[in-house]
Amino acid sequence: MEREDRVETLSEAECLRLLSTVPVGRVVYTEHALPAVLPVSFEVLDGRLVLAVRRGSATARGLDGTVVAFQADLLDPVTRTGWSVLVHGRADAVRDPEQVRRVLRSGLRPWVGDPDPLFIALVPELVSGRRLFPTGQFGSTGQFGSTGQYGPGTPGRTALRP
Image (spheres, helix red, strand yellow):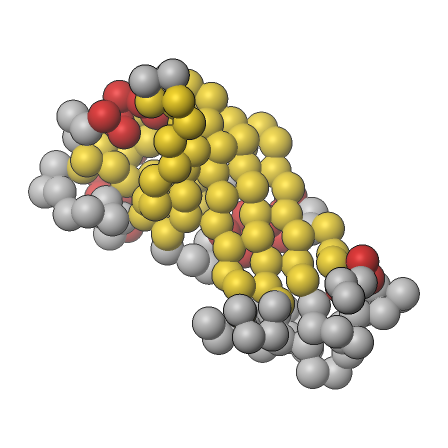
């Protein structure tokens, strides 16, 4: 039986921090009046999510200038633990040459290779996330037990291994 005390609602800051620990997420947008979901490479830069897509693709056309959703997670199917973050916001192609050079220097490239990628900046407007704890590891005080396994760089926590 699932217990609600295994679920922690994450702050926006923690959601953005967790997003910066994974290289691939899923972007949800509209294509031909239907929802489309696609894995994309991304980075968190200056509080924005920057997605790398193939220039001239249907995805690039479907994202530029629209409101989209973006989801990423790190889940362990054995222990049924991990985290999931959902972001909604406006997506626009990065057109400023200096910003494009900065993103290129970061090494971000499309999940499907492309020598001339298009970068899409997603400004988070709604951000939500949840962390799932192992049974018995998250008590009514909202604190981890001594063996919690979450998020690198967080005191008392170790990174989840998929």
